[in-house]
Amino acid sequence: MGLDSEEADLVVIKDEKAKEGTLCLHSFSDLTYVSPVVFLYLLKECYKHGSLKATKKFQALQYRVHQVLANKPQPGPATFIIKCLTVLPMFGVYGEGFSHLVISALRRFFKSVSEPTSEEDMSSARKLAAEFFLATVGGSLTYDEKVMMHTLKVFDVGLTSIDEALSVSEVWQGYGFTCGTAFLEQYISDLIKSKSFMTAVTLLEHFSFRFPGETFLQQMVEDKDFQAAERWATFMGRPSLCILVQEYGSRNMLKQAYNVINKNYLQQDFPELYHKCKESALKVLAEKACWDVAENKTKGDRQLLKYLVYLAMEAGYLEKVDELCDRYSLQGLRKAQEAEVAFVQKSFLRLNDLAVEDVVWVDEVNELRNATSFLEGCRVVGIDCEWKPNYIKGSKQNKVSIMQIGSDTKIFILDLIKLYNDASEILDNCLSQILQSKSTLKLGYNFQCDLKQLALSYGDLKCFERYDMLLDIQNVFKEPFGGLAGLTKKILGVSLNKTRRNSDWEQRPLTQNQLEYAALDAAVLIHIFRHVRDHPPHDSSSETVQWKSHIVSHMESPKKLKKKPKCHSTQTSASTFNKPSDN
Image (cartoon, rainbow, N blue to C red; front, side, top):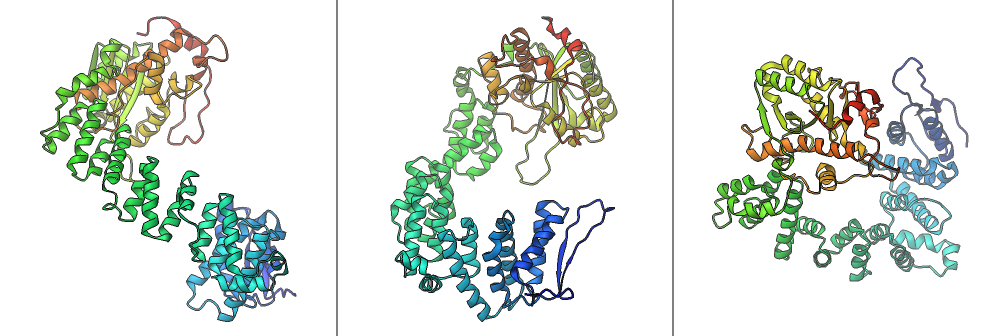
């Protein structure tokens, strides 16, 4: 089939001066004389020589194919695309990606044009698509199952089309298949045996088959293909959805059961299970210390509120117990004072256990200067930050509210919001003195994340752009232990109570429990460091690595940081921290 240069040409765009990548584009004024093979060859050349990233190239070419389908492809756009799919495997590695490209372009073309093609074109394409399906099932065309399913849907291939395709297929007739129903039932049964559940469900839906029984649902749940199970149950209707919920409930898969119940309005069918699911969701939120979110999830349900109070008691979040009891008049529940004995028995680490003598709240300039003077005289300090969580998806995070810095005996809690508003320059100078001190080892836990958040919160301060002598404790250990609380449990034998992690750190004054929580996070770092320093590894199998090699200095702006910073040894400075005294 000829190719007239005036009617079809390949435009190659190259701009060596352009900073952005470029892409070669088809520019077909008329597809009348362009065969699918030539079209795909030019498409491949466009993709091959384009300098944009792969995703951008794919999107640009998809749009271009969608446009040119209006330029008289023969015998029509639908037939042209199915012929493209038939020959695409000869293009090797480009075949799979281009198959999705041309199918999505045709789908887009159908949606954008009021009369996209003739009935004659669609009928011809449907016939070829049925043959394409049989060839793919038989293995003479190599495509993944998604392409096969998309082809059936886009070309609206029904059972009648499969019957017609089988009637002219000597191969499938040789296997005894002359009826589309028998062929599809056998193929779907084979898919179920091979655990290709989603493909089986898609075919069952497409051809409106309902032959698998209740055991099909059980198979999918046992194999943890929940998406396929829920799609099949939804297609089958309410009785199957109820069976699915029962399956989830019997396996204590409460999250999955809750989603199906909610989505399909089955609350009245499963009242007890639904309540149990809600309690489970509250427990997950409480374990993540998302108390405000958990409270909103109760929607004022007193039974759920009582359960939330119980969770707060169990976690030792005593002020939350009082807060909920007072707000919702839950007079029948134990107050925080009654729960305190049970809380102490849980043996969380307390500030007194670490012999911290003083916790100082700093929100005035003179207090900040005194704190800076004290901290500059310390050989080792622990640092951490807190900010109020934001639960609105996609919204900007709140400013860092406080920074806690201290020695093993004295912790300063800086009210960053107030100090920044009152005296930002002095705050900048004082924090620069502390963070950039070459004689003080700063200990943090994932503190680079805190630094990034600090830089975003207070972008005009220079103190967070550079620091010296920072040791991130989490990098010292070869294996993760479940955050700072888990590491504390491993090293000191008792865990931290993290229930206040997501509390309101912008409220003033902070509660006594919040102050203790904040101070503990800084103080415990020093005690963990002492363990690392006083118990050096004796061989390569030790759980710790040489801590001195993980001291980091001279970091660029955290806002611009893309790669993990290089850590370099500062052996000369680090040697001073081998001494017993940290002050």
